[in-house]
Length: 113
Length: 111
Image 1: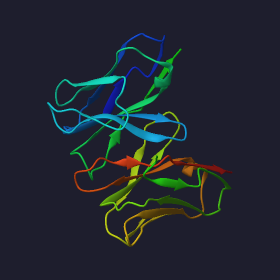
Image 2 (image 1 turned 180 degrees about the vertical axis):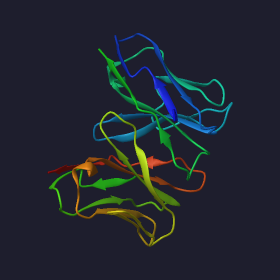
Image 3 (image 1 turned 90 degrees about the vertical axis):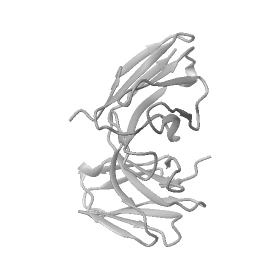
């Protein structure tokens, strides 16, 4: 029962470095999401992909880019990491965009120093 | 600004006590979901409510959706240490809208 798998689990970056968070789901879901979770802020949507071939900005897209590589995979890229991007990142998927259960990955802890 | 306000932010109780967590908004939602998140893991869906006034029960957990579909509550009866976690509410403004999450209520149940 893999569900949503994201890598890496932990990463430390220096300011200005770039990296890509990988995410894959094996539930044949149409919609995929990237959230960040910060203390007291809850989950905030960075980008989402309603279906293969489409991506849209969420609440906090600045400093990030995404790629919906195929129906299974949705990656998040930080081109030039900043300390403000220190956070826990969650990839998630759902059958369709709204009203359905969202299934989350286990999270990626990113620290930018 | 959080569209969904959860209260309290933190709740610490003894095993066997009851607790209620609230999720409030000035906006109407077509549906509202409750998730529980344990340390080091992603949130997991507990329930979805879609009808104003709806009450759903999941063992010792009772979820209620307000009549006006602007608020919801989660009541836990006879809490157990296994209920410890971060409880998140999330609302969809319409059938096509993206889910909006509250900041969460951290619940700690001590033996």
